Image (tube, rainbow, N blue to C red):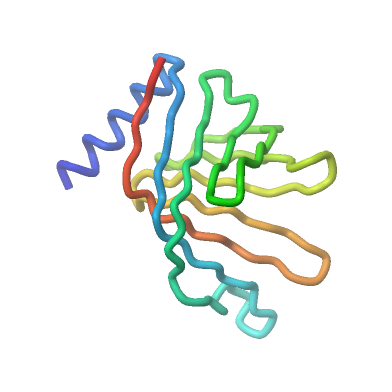
Length: 132
């Protein structure tokens, strides 16, 4: 509990000081939307994948880097709810996603909406740090 509170305090302090935040994830899982249950409960196995999320001080974009390269998601809107940072982002000029940085649960969720399938990718946060 103390460790989670310290983690949260450090992140909030980082945002207050306008520094860059980095989030490291080594594992993720993809869950698809189930029309019958109306939930994202069709999940695959946990995948081992090293990746870094970077949120710069101006929060204009979120970059995502993995073995395949770097993708940039441009922030259109940001909301803070219950120690969670909700970003409405756009990839390229057409694809819209929701990115949730959930500090208490130590995860980043990426909601992907598609005309045929919707999915959530859960990235489990292993480490985070900030820099000026």
